[in-house]
Structure formats: structure tokens, C-alpha cells
Amino acid sequence: MNQYRLYKGAWIFLEESKENLLSEKESKDLLRNGGLMIRNTYDFDTKEETSFWFIIKDELEDISELPSSTRKKIRRALKIYNFRIITLEELRTIAYDIVVSAEQSYNNLLKHTTKESLECLIDEYKNDGNKECWCVENKISGEIVGFSVNTIKIDSCEYDNAKCKWESLHDCSQPFYGLFYTMNQYYLGEKKLKYVCDGSRSITEHSNIQPFLEYNFKFRKAYCKLRVYYKWWFGVVINVLFPFRNVIPFRNVRAILKMEEYSRSFK
Image 1 (cartoon, rainbow, N blue to C red):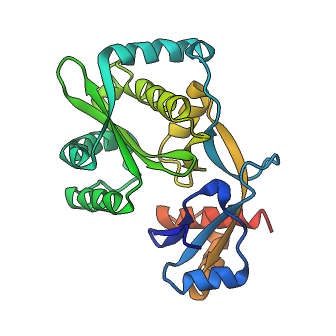
Image 2: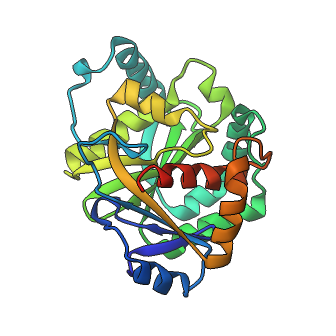
């Protein structure tokens, strides 16, 4: 149970490939420690196609095996940028301008990040003790136009938070292509991890990063099963709201109800 971490009111297991189905007693014991809900995924990488999955890459191919348009964009990015590991304190000095610029591409679906909230997030990263940061640095100007914060696990790495300045994503320099190519080479090739992961199925769908990784870098869906447990009173609220899940205007509420919909498909 010590593998669970509380994130925005929900308990999430750190090592998705090692999580098992919780019993009712185990879920109640965990919720006594706080939080409103538990996202319990199990049967990781099952052969059965399910309604929930993680986006992973567990094979490292030669660049020649990637789509021709992807190869061209990777090579362009590698000519323009350096991709290197930085410290969290270095991230603190450059992250805000990048995040503000990146949010221009989210079509106002998300709240704008404040400097204070970003500082708190970086403090959380520091307390976690398992984060590794990369930056995208222009070779000529030295400007850092993007970053990625990754969670290093026992035998895998999760790409938690990747951002690039809006201008760099639209000037044909292709920073994301170089960043993900370099990180894949490092974690799968040099570090010999079992897989890299871009997280679970997107609930809010405010970003197209997962389809991008599937098409350009041969990430795939590692299907799993999902069970969601709630504090008793929060579960009552969910049951009342569930029939109205498609008309509720609040994005965060819709996201929880969407996860409940996925969960019910396994019962």
C-alpha cells in the first residue's frame, strides 16, 4: 500500500505494471488516510482490449524504422537544439515562461498556470525525489524553449510533463520530435529500462500528445482494467451525477464521471 501517492484528491499507484486489484477492505483502509477516491488499475498490459490503458513504448527501433516525415523532423530538431538533463533548480528558473507560452495551444480548456502554483509544483517534484528533468536548448542562441519532467521508477520512466514554447512549435524547428527521440534513446537504449510511458488514457483530452507519440514513435496502448473507489459520501455524489455526465459543464467533474464510466465497464 505504500506505493500509493495522493494526487489532487485521488490515490494513484506509482508502478502501474505492479498494481493489483484492491479488496474493499484495502480500499477503505487507504481512504482513511485521506483523499476522495482511488484509481485502481490492474492486469497491466492485458491482451484483452479494454476501455482503459497506458501509453507505453517497450521496444527501441532504429530511426530508419520510423515514418519518413518523423525522421526528417527529428534530424532537423537535432541540428537546431541540444537536449540535456538539468536540475530542478535550473527548471525553476526557466519553466514559467515556457508554460505560459505553451498554454496558448490549449484552447482555453485549462486554467492558466500562476507563478506561485508552478513554484509549488516544482517543490513537490523536489520532495518526490524521483524526478529527472530535460531541457530543449537552442544551439546558437542558448535559449531554452522546452522541458520535460520525468518520473524514474524501478524499471520504467514516465514522461510526466512536457512543454515547449508555442513559437517553437510553430516555426518548423520541431523541438518535440528531438526531445522524445533523445529521451527514448536514453531510457530504452542507454539505461535499458523495460519501457517508457506517457501516462494513462487522457480523461480531459486537452492535449494530442498521446496520438502524436503513437504515430511518430511507435508508442502503443498497454490495456488494463480499472476500478474506482470513493469515500462513501463522495460515491453518493458520483452516483447522483452519473446520469447527467454528458451535460455537466464543469470539466473536472466530467473527468471524474468519465473515469467512473470506464470503471463500470469492468463490473
